[in-house]
Length: 357
Image (tube, rainbow, N blue to C red; front, side):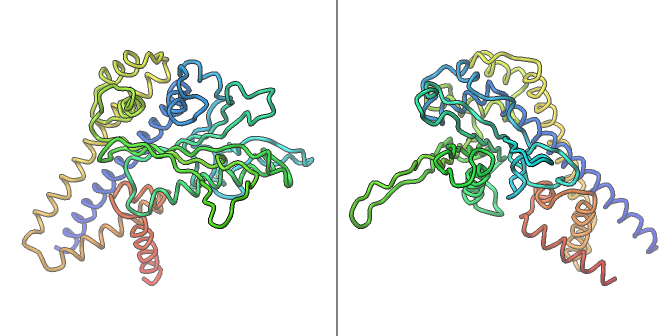
């Protein structure tokens, strides 16, 4: 009898694990497609027109040519000491980001999208000619930490990592202006905020030399409902359509190609189509997980005593299993809808319990 119950419980846990892993994999693919879409130069150009002063009023098609090279997507580590390219064996200086995808760096937090852009009309006048742009996508405002604190860390890394990459020794005047632009979905309303340095004179006034505009954070909130096409919400409608999990492929293509005249190149069309398919897959897998949980809840309705403890134990085991299979705490939190600190605590406690056994 006990063996039969144990086998059923094991089968249930394996099925639940399979559903969660499937949902997590689909979410990871969805996130990757979203980043590739945002990393298209045609889309980045629309973002630049609405966020960087020098590009305001320009045609996005004209702005594309100012984006240098190919934007780095999920390849540049955020961690100190790992953002820049490594010097060669003979000590020559290498410029650029560290885009190595070696296994030793697996699991590191990386910038979603980062790239250099030239500023129009600045060359030859001794002025700043390049800025560094970082674009981050968030499915919503996270509950485990305050998002602005993370944005401040990211923009600070974009500043500090320039040493020995964009300037050497104490040539701080050569620092480039940086922007960290955050696109947060599923917000209550469409918003955009520019967070930057300001100077307050408390006693007397002195003209301290330096550039207050070096550090910039732009927070873009996308409401669940797509806004009508207007000058104010032009960027919100484009990004909302791109990242929507409600619009059909045809509706998305009509908005992107029809309203914004963005050429529907093969890569762009493929990623838009993939996101539509993945949205459907995630929804179906979510339903499967919820259905299995509902059946289990009903099956044990008459066994109130020990039910909660059993659920907690099973959930902790599932989280540990996902962790052992290479999922990060952040990925597990997203898949199980838990706070990342709670996931880390459960992993630590479960590992301790297993080691004691």
